[in-house]
Image 1 (tube, rainbow, N blue to C red):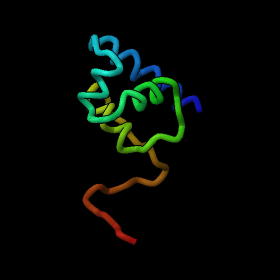
Image 2: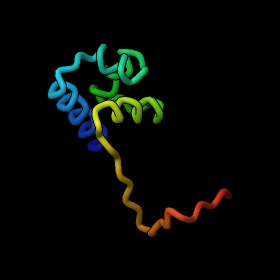
Image 3: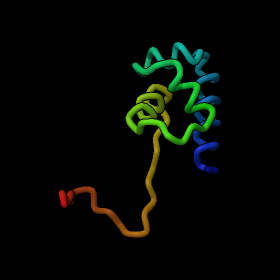
Length: 78
């Protein structure tokens, strides 16, 4: 839950810093205005690709920290 709120705040701060309305951000991301609203309010059941589209417009990246090192050159399919 803490991470969701942190992401929500980051999106809102970056959107405002870019002088974008929720509607403008949604248009640039190719998503509905409701998606931006939901993300900024910490909704936990959003489509991951929708979140990534919004973050991409704001130039926000996510990172994944795992306890097991992942070699990006190896991709297992099973």
